[in-house]
Length: 382
Ligand code: COS
Image 1 (cartoon, protein in one colour):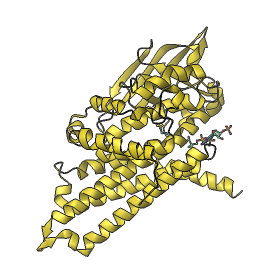
Image 2: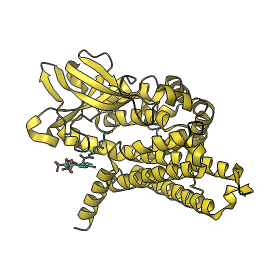
Image 3: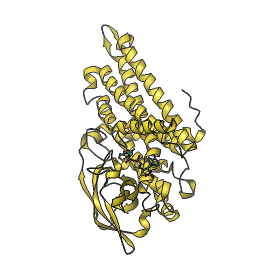
Image 4: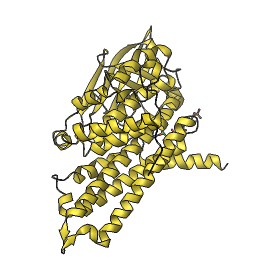
């Protein structure tokens, strides 16, 4: 379908597609098997200027928005959702600075992010605070002109690989969500270290690690936005980031569909290619329809978010739920179309099915997304 992209948007798609084809696809199985972070591919993405997509031009970026990120992520995800997750998580990590950071913070961090010289990560989740994001325990106490952070963040994408971390901590634990604030912690800050690296089912080329802050001292100007407004910035950050996760689902679903159709045209059973059987055709037809429907919703949601940044929660959650549930279903169906071969690591759909599962879990489970949509409906029909 024609989504009427501008010339610049077409260029973003083409650039990301080339990286997926030439740099990601040839090594994705090996990265998956070795649980290896794709540092050299990040350098390729940096050289192609893709890290600057969402950074305003005055800070060295291309000045794009949510829609441009979605376009790039979809193409990268066709290659490997693990690699694309590293890109998406860096954007997620710097969004709080873009949304609520001071001019000085933007000047300090954004040009390096745009150039791909440094990557970011977002530190919200803790062992006992996942879906219940306001249940975090990490604290930040002002001591003279330094903040002192204590706590452990869990399952942080890009942990140990990024250089810039936006950390959510309680500056007033008695106030719950209203007592949370966001801080920039940099790799090498005193008292900041990395814990165990996770061994995951899928997206194994992305790094997932604990962040440990033990009397971690940072200068007072690392507070992002006003003290006590951190939770709202977290929610806005997730609102703008979730369409990116949705687009990973679209790219992954498309890649699985491509594999399934290609296989069905080659695989001969009962004397003809299996694409000639209605049982297979109907599966492929449903897969193709679901991928296209998800793409249309994700693009519309991202364009809506760029045009109406104050009214994004519902569409953001809707596209995340729809496209990632689709990716799970379509990758399972792709394995089914390939049958026994689909279950073997020799074919890429096995990895695709494992990679799809996390999309329904991270950046807010799909159950939480449905809660958000439900709450918004409740408000709309008040
Ligand atoms: N934009 C701006 N403000 C928002 C908001 C949004 N999208 N969503 C909530 N808020 C505000 C509310 O208005 C409320 O403000 P006041 O205290 O001033 O009234 C405050 O934030 C707290 O909101 P709420 O009471 O709805 O928070 P809950 O603790 O009930 O949690 C959910 C809401 C479940 C939606 C939230 O915890 C969440 O998104 N959880 C999932 C977290 C997640 O995605 N984790 C994945 C790891 S991060 S990669």
